[in-house]
Image 1 (tube, rainbow, N blue to C red):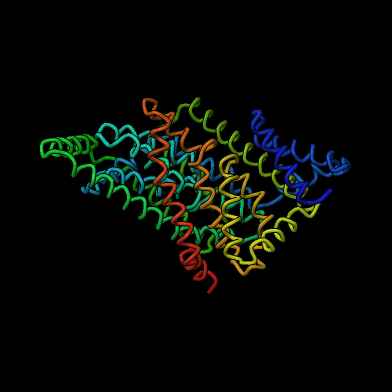
Image 2: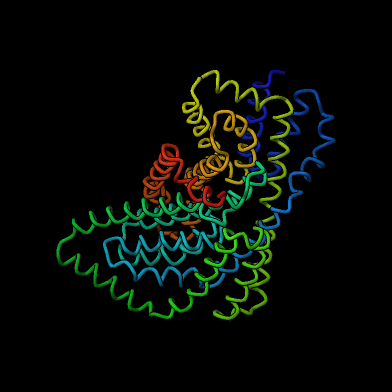
Amino acid sequence: MDPLTIAFAAVGILLALILVGLPIGYALLGAMVASSVLVGEPGELLYVAETAFQSLDSIELVALPMFIFMGAVIAVSPAGADIYSALSRLLPVPGGLGMSTIAGCAMFSAISGSSPATVAAMGSSGVPEMLARRYPPGLACGIVVGGGTLGILIPPSIVLLLYGVVTKTSIGQLFLAGILPGLMLVALFSIYTWYVMWRHLSRLSPQERAAFEALGAERAEAGGGGSFRRVVPFFALMAGIMLALYGGWATPSEIAAVGATASILLVLAIYRITSWPVWRELLLKTVQDTSMILIIAAFAYTFSQFLAFHDVVSAITGLLIDAFDNRWVTLFALWCVMLVLGCFLPPFAIVVIVAPMFLPFVLSAGFDPVWFGVFVTLNMEMGCITPPLGINLFVVKAIARKVEMREIMKGSLPFLAILALGTLLITLFPDIVLFLPSLLMR
């Protein structure tokens, strides 16, 4: 059977299984099994278990459950609310509360490495507070939806970790590469938030504006100052993780283990959370999330190996190169493919499928594999916003139950456009990504 026919058949079966409600990981396995039977080579199924095991036989993956656990420990405590409260009083400008929410998302991302965890932790405090201060509902929800995407870019990033494992790229360099793009997005999100709130306030009457500012001052005063003292140790933990990782003091797996242990001790010491049911639920969530990601990663790798074995990868790469005969146009085509996949698949599934498939073209076209890792991750961030999967949309909807999903999506679209702008900027100016990793190589 022709490789492109196999590709269309395999992807069609995969999407059909997802649409009927089969979990992503098992849909990948089912698509691989059905495709093997379709091409008349069911003997390939004998190697499924071995291939899946090989995909997970990596010491770097030990860091995955540790980072998930560290984020869950902090998310289950009031630490997220305290980080938000501490930052919310630092920016007395139009949109200052929203900008503080974005900064809080960035800082929480640097601790948790997970987009849904960032949205849940910061949104549970940020969305109600912004709505209480009479922010437009769409903007309030969009800020958290957009800010939550930083969770898979700012290190430690689970998506960058998986990309490093499947492409054999330095995880330390990938984590460094995510810092400046992450800060760039924080700045762009903040500028947009300031502009929208400045326009919103300029349309109010003097009396309405005075009432708005008085309400903000009253709620900020009610927040108290204790949150600053409580979050300082978490900022120290974040700084320690960065120093240890980029100073070469330890491996990502060792740092993840120390970070998870430190987060437990901080939560016990500061918030006195000793209830066994809480810790039991936290452990179960960690196991569930880790298992889900690893199952998807294993079967996504198996699926990608099936495609590679039948020359689908080289056929698609050749088709793209022959069709456009320009590496930039081809890169744009890859971006469109990943954007469409982001509407249906979670980020870690896409990166395991796409990275090995497109990396040969990326290398032959002269693109840096570290840069491509951030490029892919930015696309995955957009997938966290785009329906029908758009996990960040549903997490925020669970928090802001009275806000219509249509309004949440409308408020999130500008942040989606900013992510697209960020992708364009790192493409035009790749040093935004590669500057810090280049320092590590000296």
